[in-house]
Image (cartoon, rainbow, N blue to C red; front, top):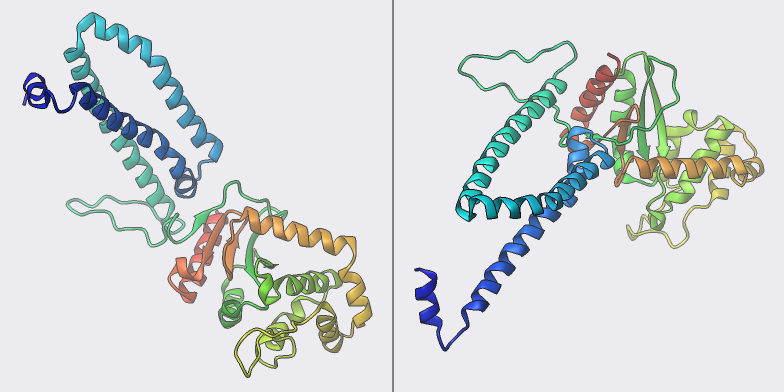
Length: 335
């Protein structure tokens, strides 16, 4: 149906100008939507390819700048060669760009697949067959931390950190696998623990303070498993009421934790409590909170490999998968 016929049909009912306004509104709305789409893709692009937010934002800004600069030239081209030829030329250019974009994406996917192979392996093309998918995929099984957080370890050492809380039931359930992980890692691995405090309703801040205090006094590692037992087995530092299954009305305090450590390690409870109030312990708690924020940890247990990679039991497909993936990432960092 041509525009003149449409105008005759709408004569006396709706001015044809409103049709033009409606079409232009839809086109502009779609254009704005496409233009705004890159904003929601920044985090996925960071995780998939390791690009920084500044790099991605710079590319988006350049795209917007070029879109504005091309306006006068597009108008001049319209006046010179006409609307039809300008549209055809634009479509041809669009096809060329999309073709090259697909080639670039294919190259990135190939590079990512090669990066996900075991150390020492290479991608070998097989005639008539698609390449085998990588077992561990960045952005699905593990996530890149941008920017990476320096570990402060000597060259050649790789740090594996568990973000945990003594009051976290999933962390307690993972304990047997954590011991298995510690026995499976290479000799150059340094295992560390990072206490989380983002669940105050279940007393996590107190347990974080207790761990950092014990760490300062040099008694954290040898009492690590015993603390889990005190919360989940004996109930000495339990957070749940055995009779109701709900949270206790009165949660364990730092004084309760101090008495526990006194019985286990001989450090006087008064000294433990006093140490928990020092500037050094307070500073370390703040450092730990900042690290957890930078790692973008939203659950426990979460594992950080060398300050660069984040993974969980769920992303690795289970506890045994996590152990395998951690060792794979350690080998990747040990190259």
